[in-house]
Image (cartoon, rainbow, N blue to C red; front, side, top):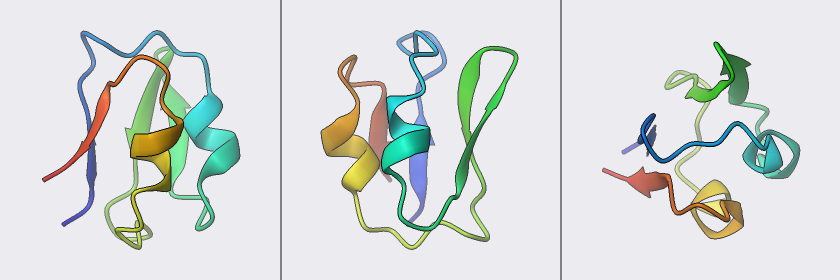
Length: 57
């Protein structure tokens, strides 16, 4: 299952964007946005997020 961003918790720090090995995360309206087609379900973004705003479904 692809990563999911909780927009209420996301502060827009872009840490996940830099850490994503498949470049599946971008920013939209100052929040992280996961491209489910490119997400490889690795969980790197979950561990990288300092705000615990990303989970694996």
